[in-house]
Amino acid sequence: MLLKSIDIFFSFVFGLAVGSFLNCIIYRLYHHQSLFGRSVCPKCGHQIAWYDNIPLLSFIILRGRCRYCHQKISWQYPLVELITGILFVAAFFYRGCYLSISNNLLILLRDWLIIFAFIFIFVYDLRYLLVENAIIIPAAIIVFILNLILKVPLTKLLLAIGVSVSFFGIQYLITKGKGIGLGDLSIGLLMGASLSWPNILVGIIVAYIVGAVVGLLLVLSRKKKWESRIALGPFLAVGTIIALFYGQKIINFYLSKLY
Ligand SMILES: [Zn+2]
View 1 (cartoon, rainbow, N blue to C red):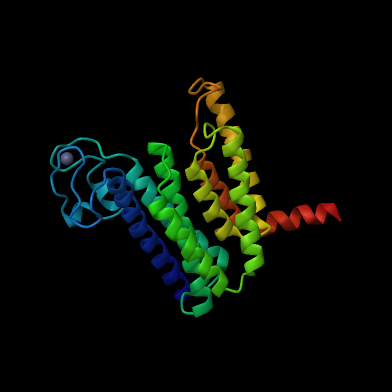
View 2 (tube, rainbow, N blue to C red):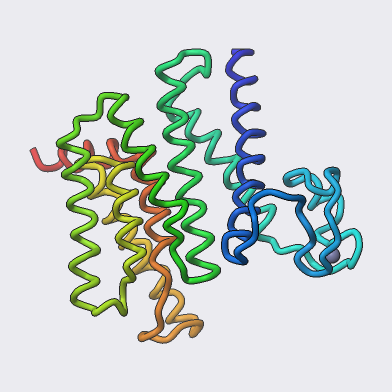
């Protein structure tokens, strides 16, 4: 029990740190900055001291403002840190595993990588309406290899990738790239490699249901018009994370209703 609470605490703190790193690479990739070097305030350019760069805590202590120019720090920073921390704990919790057992550790590392990549997709696509292959393609390859090591059948992985990539590919061709960008095909690749068959179906269906509901709410609240383009990435991210944790349960539920 003690071991487990230490593991949960470690998962959370590690998740906060990864969330902080995510904020950093999201900003720097978009602004074509080096990933190395000290962080600076995007408003005034002042270098940020380590004690003002502690995930979550610094935002609270500084009350959401830069120490030097007193301008507001985006809510994206604490939110991404907190959500990464929570999802890292959730992955640990759902696998019911101890970090000390090596095979479980591999499953956990795979889930953490999937969560990392999809939080990146969520924020990047929502903020900039862009999909960044420099993160997505390497993540897809590593997750694919980890799944092979974890004895997920190759045929199921390839089937899942084929289904999701062609699903987005067909929409790309039909809408002539207006509804769906080529970047969404890379997300499809990562989704297939992450979820495998048949879980990929849950990921896609959940993503489209969430997308339809949110889209309708945005139109009703007059924030968007029918013909507006809404980023697809955030919904694919939500669908994938839900399928990662609950996919098997959802599939079992529907199969039990069928027979
Ligand atoms: Zn500043």
